[in-house]
Image (cartoon, rainbow, N blue to C red):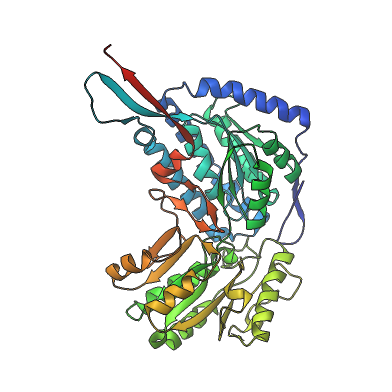
Length: 459
């Protein structure tokens, strides 16, 4: 398995797939290790997981350029991913005691009644390349804190991230077998699931890949958490702080070259503010610097591969052919010709929902902006999507957000921010975005099974 860098097409690293015999040995050792790990005191689990976080942060200087080489993230933003990794990990470690505490039923004389949370056993985490530390940590740390053993299969584009997780847990002194990074093919992963070798899989990736996971699990009764695609909308109301909205909506659309499942991919602006919003968004977008992600001045790196960039180019071309206008002057962004992984950011106006760019996931640096006539039209358009991960409303009226949020078909409602995971809140989605949840106490519910104790103390 090779990592081909989007920077220049060179091979960053090459790793052999695990053999069938090696995999059987890993599975056997994980089961044995989990039996002891589940009996380990929660405070000790917290100490070891915390030490792994420390070990990961100590590798920061090597990790940041590694990220750039593997998936194109500019080095000026690389440390931000580790900051988010730490925030989520430490939060989930900190709430473990309360989240895993038994649920005591109402007192009844002569009886003892409670629900305890037991670990599932062996959890497989299948992680994506676009936020390779952040998405993986959402499941890995709480799964371990809950007493499970964890197998990590990282995306082929970011194999080195899986190795960094292994190094961090090894340096922390985690018992051997409790965590194991594996280099697996899609076929090997499917066979692992079909063979009922794990007790849960947490997958982050595309909708088609999520369907493959479900097909592999059919009939096994193995639980799955699926965080799939997104086409997240932003709605800028007439009373919004326009400068704040412009700055943050543009960042939400183009950060990580638009390669974020919860990035902003479509914008609806109250007609009274539409022209001013578009003018400001265009001015800000034109200041982005597309180039080598190893250069500290670069604010927009390449997409993960040329084919992904050409997919977005095709969406833009189809929209323009259908009547949309592309506002960003491509000549401001060298190296962004067809066949290159480097893609200029683009703003489209005169768009509508007949266009794929407003309906299908782009996962790249393009956003369509439409005027709307108030809340009713905005909500209807925001819900007109097969996805539902997050939605943002830009306004000074919090009560309006509460009211509109109740009608939005989405997992998270943001007000005056976007593209952020708060570890205290459940990260989840609806429709084709998938099912299950990570983070918050609810994330622990998906990594444990309830067992009820109903004891008659007197006979």
